[in-house]
Image 1 (tube, rainbow, N blue to C red):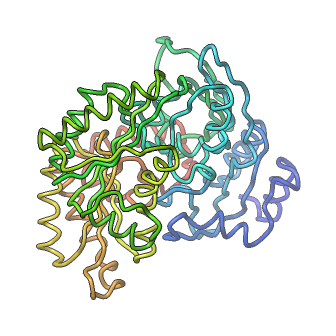
Image 2: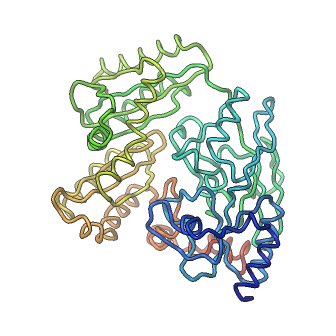
Image 3: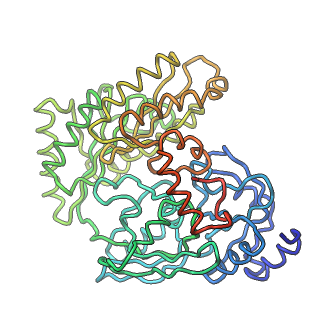
Length: 471
């Protein structure tokens, strides 16, 4: 490996003076993960402006044995885009690669650079009268390349699927510096292995995603948002089944939130609406959309919710009266994470389960947590429609927060073992990163892990692509 000054000089010749981040505060920001759990010390932070520059950088890194840490909006929640402290890993930020390459309203496709933010994609689609449904927080920072690298989910998975379901084609810079041009807008292509799916969800360990061809959808002309009061998660499952039968594909989001979540939001966001006169054990936030009239959709949702209350599935339900009210309902869900942060630190788990097992899982895991850590408070919310839960544990009231957080491995072991018993996954939409890299070894078979390592060795024989993550 050449000395640092020589390597930086060669890097600067590739990206130009504007592509090499020199401000120390900016470098620290790129080297610190979203939750501030990990802080790295990179060799440098580079911002290429085009795919050719990415290819030249990665080729240089392959020649010099320099590790590459691809980074999108740096919103990883598992340290997946954070370098180590060796000073020998290069952060490769895609932030300057933010072009909308092409939008085809007839084919309903959008070709983009990997550094485009979700907010910019939403705006481009909306301007064309279309919908790009991937929606994760914060959309103004999260970049599509990072979303694809973790196969992000979001609140509309129930109707539209995960990030990989939106991808028709990819452009990827391989560990050799070669560029695989898979930017095809085909919806049917059975001409060999579907290579794009190797890179989606790989967290930059197999190559750098530099472009994508994405699916667009007709823009809904009608939307109804409602908050439903429930007795239990089991009632939530019954309501989900009922609404899917009554509303079909119009049901685009179904979020389950515990009373603890709602209490935290109201405490730290006092302007939040008091939708019901009394508190309830659980709540469901639902959204239905359609390309038909607002009046027709309202009648459909209203009738379905009235029937749910009459049948005892739900305790009560309120449909948002207008768009500002709908946004206020959604903020009850979207503010949960910030409310938790304001309340104090907690031990987070991003898990997925077979949908039919969720109520049994919660009963069993809540009991196990109480037995092992008396007074600890589960803060549970998530996308019930796709089985993805955020099962977070706060310290017991009055207990020492730091002492409880120090027991994170023990707490997570209880949760993850329970997830495994119910046939679930310990990584739903945040990925493994470095946070869960060792933990996954307990739950995947040796054969499955070796298959993953074989793919890694084949595509990245020198191990320079985001080392220390996933495998």
